[in-house]
Length: 189
Image 1: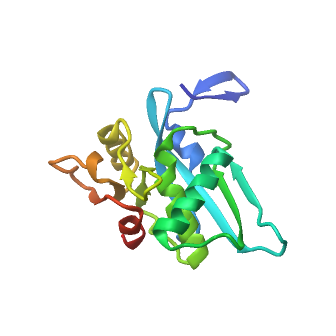
Image 2: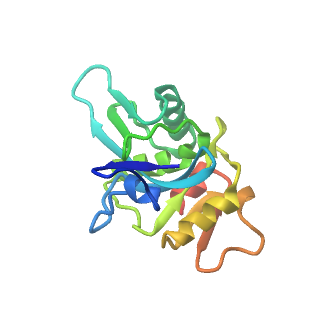
Image 3: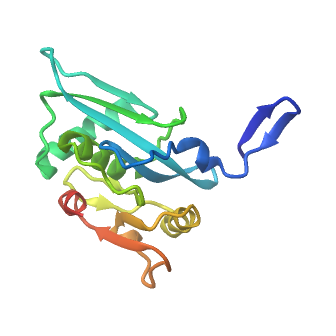
């Protein structure tokens, strides 16, 4: 459960996803919403990435809310299988709200946010992504795929990029699903 401290004591937060979304008035480069699973419930969390040409001999890698080793692995996969070379760029990633997420479903949204920042191209504000990236560039399924899709639909999102094996056969009413098998497909989508 999520609780907020008020003058009257603790009160339940009915929609915890609202805490972790900044809701920009217009889409901005480097920002994407992901649906994570923390404990027993799905949460929508904004993933932010900033890619900037380095001014030093060694580029900086800063990760807030995600494992820095996972970020390094992700950058290598993006370089090898996505054609996005970030070796001469500083990379900063952040999960809004100070949440720490250890599940691998953050891989695909982080890769898309990093590509968006590098290209200076915003992603649609109604887009959500989740999925694990393998070392060979494949997008791997994650647990509770349909539950994640129901939560993002409930919160008003209309499009999802997700692992092909997490795509329900019948689809989800009101959602446009873009199943992908590789990082290259996800970047093209």
